[in-house]
Length: 239
Image (cartoon, rainbow, N blue to C red):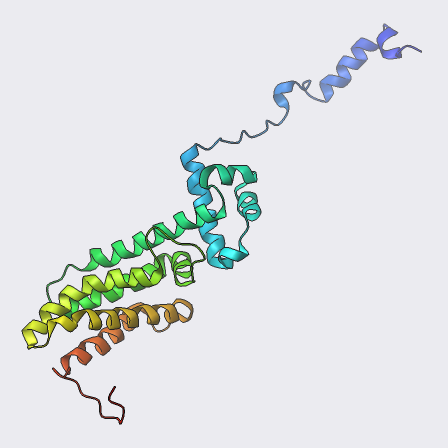
């Protein structure tokens, strides 16, 4: 049976009036356009994967993070992650190396003052600034890395920072008549204490950063101020 609208000569005007009352006929241009997804460049995709990996590694650690989760967060397939980094290990290595360079750069760049005590303050502030601004990065660094890094471990990074402080202490030791050869030992002790305090402050965030820096320098500076040229042991053990 044929459609009556198509054969009845009296229907066109009725149909037109009905259509006109409903508004203009729809066309393809009236359909909602699907938003075009902007295609990332290779460099942009790499940075996206690094950001996502950094967040996940900080929250879950290396073992708790999977390539599947990284890819899902980025909205890509697993082969894309392998294409850029060769796997989870490669992505983790780049993240860690970047964070270590960032921290070392901030500490080294902070050592600009002339007075040794102010230099100690600047070094303490630099580490605390990094913890505050790059919290995820610090969480990653203080974990034991399951794979070797081109820039070494967190312990070797602290040693690098101590080397910067070592020169400052060496000069101060000479001025006070102490053995400058012991400056590396004291530099490791001072920087290590700041790093461990930073790990504690990472979660508690109390007291405020400036107060933490003041107390760290108070311990370090006044400890050095009362330093004995030839310290002696008072207990029964002598070796």
